[in-house]
Image (cartoon, rainbow, N blue to C red; front, side, top):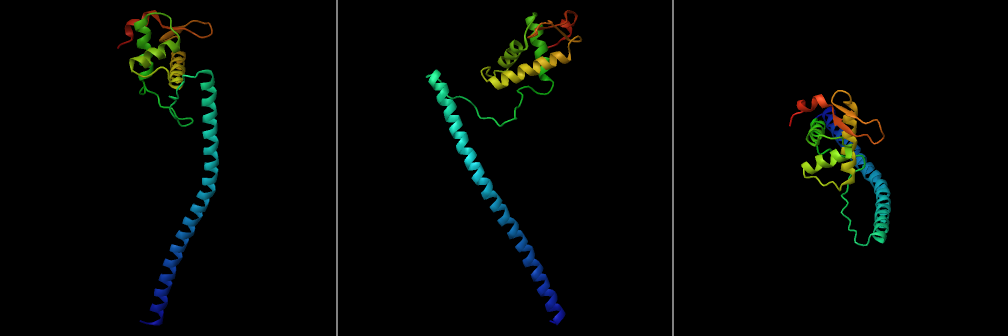
Length: 166
């Protein structure tokens, strides 16, 4: 093997070692950043445990028989129990079946009960109620009509009752 081949082989080996070194440096940096993040996460976790415990103590002080049945949920994450397009259709069906003025919350409760979903889940009930109210507001005048008072009540426009299908 000539000098140039030896030199080329060593340069290849150096390049390989340098690539591995960069990879190791990146991994070390990632671990060190993770350690800093770990300390902050541990502090936040301890604080959350104290906050939850304190809130539970306050509730049990006023309601001794209370048992925590709260389900964890990620902040800002909510999945509707209704598929796209299903919520409006079901809300209109409830109005047709009831054939009276109704508030969105009443409608949401009936819709959730029909799907065997607990209505004691405040977040889900509130979100479905807001969605029903929003749907009706969007279709006011063409599908539904409302009272002009605050906490509106809604009903199908009388001529459209026959048009809403199951």
